Length: 319
Image 1 (tube, rainbow, N blue to C red):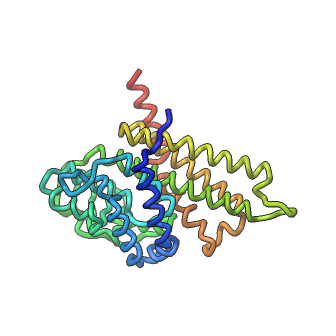
Image 2 (cartoon, helix red, strand yellow):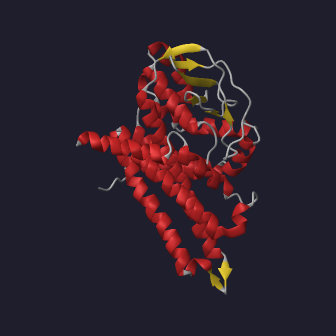
Image 3 (tube, helix red, strand yellow):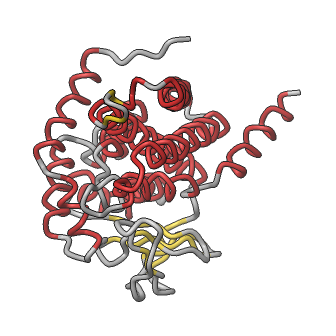
């Protein structure tokens, strides 16, 4: 089965790509990693005006959604440009607040849709992403979803642009957990990982065309072509899984898409580093902005083993 975007969806992707290309996202990422959120917030506002976060917010609360396919389209572009910030967490928060009831939804969702507010979410016993930047912090407590009153110190992360913070206990109880929120989080993570993988592949193909050895581009070597072909194949197999899952929003199908996209992005990252050689390790070259994100997204919101186990259990129930 082929999943092709319609003209409106392709135009949406192209407009986001143009917006993010003009924003010099590598500089934004480096600022964010240092704790300077000014340029990141400006980029966040521009993405929000394009409708990115409104796609997860129902129309009743000033959103455009729920529209998971368009959200996946948007997050592929966000991943392609390695945009920092609690992107997936804001989408997850929108789903949690929608299920919390009209009181919390009416009070908090419009600001998420407009980009006025960043949100983060912490599962029970886990750190929250960018709790120092987010104004809305939701903690999954044993008794339900709570509006955390604050956060602890920033902890180091494998990806410097993913700043981890513990959330303060207590706070207003908003409602029970919403199981579907995890499905949305995994869908957005899968799309983001696919975008990261595509960016790494594009950068590597460009590099091996320019780098020469024995008087010819290294991209002409058969071994190099095979590595790139394997990466391309894995990413292209993940793409229909992603958009098929966005159409159905079945938890097992979304988990399969996340496992495939994150594993493809991680394998592409390893290939990219191998083919770039020593320059790939340098901060100045910038490849690491995507390499570390591919590794971090692989385990975010469920590692590949967890996602595969969900797929297997869903298949067992059918039989």
